[in-house]
Image (cartoon, rainbow, N blue to C red; front, side):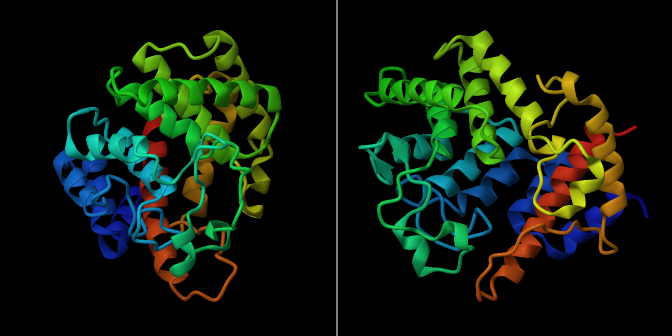
Amino acid sequence: MTAFEKARKYIYQHARPLDLARWQYHFENGMKEAVLAALEMYQNADGGFGYGLEGDYFNPNSSPIQTWVATEILREINFTEASHPIISGILGYLSSGRDFDAAHRQWLNTVPTNNDYPHAIWWTYKEGEVEFRYNPTACLAGFFIKYGDRENAFYNTAAEIAREAVQFWISDMPYAEQHITSCFIRLYEYCTEAGVEIADTNLYRQKLVEQVRYELMRTADQWDAGYVCMPSNFISTKDSIFCADNAELIKKECAHIVSCQLDDGSFEIPWKWWNDYGEFEVARMWWKADFCIRNMRFLREFGA
């Protein structure tokens, strides 16, 4: 069996309907509509997303992080219809002030109701938490800039948040936290696609390239040592602004993907919840399916 065939078998045996639909869209001529139909099942009446869409916490209530995951899936399937109920719902949730810390002008990284459901320790809500460092705020502001109506009262607020975020991030570099950097990469992409300049575009791009170069674990034999940063964390297509600097690492990751695939077709998850919730084993299967999709997409794009 090839790496792809083994990954496909794991998907069909263990994936959520949403992830099966994603797999079929990418590799089996599946329809975007199937992905959207499955994604809608995670959307709440307030437009935000919950129900464990982010696999490491099972909170059914809306939260900014789970809503961010929805925006990433929409981007993954290149769905850009701003009038669609999923996107209009997200815009409504973001502009409602719900789960938004007005004092610090950031959407919450964790929400109080997380603590009522199984979750990894890093999604535990702590009263008075303010150091979000723009995860997921930078990405969500960019989403609103790209898809929001410029006449919407919240549009200017989103643009201001984005400008403040970029100023903070550039002044704070280097900061080795891949999730934050990913949010700023997405903000750059959203603004570029929308034709909106929130900062010196050339400087912003240059700083992104420098930060990715800084964060990547460049010693490939240490990639199995734990939760480390590899090219696929930032790079998914050959037109990425990060390809030129990291061509050799990309090649090494393709070989690494094949070499570390497990017998059941999946890939090991390099983290735990660090608590007693047995639901981690369910989440682990979900994440393995997600890794199958991501890794096979990476191999298809960059493999020989």
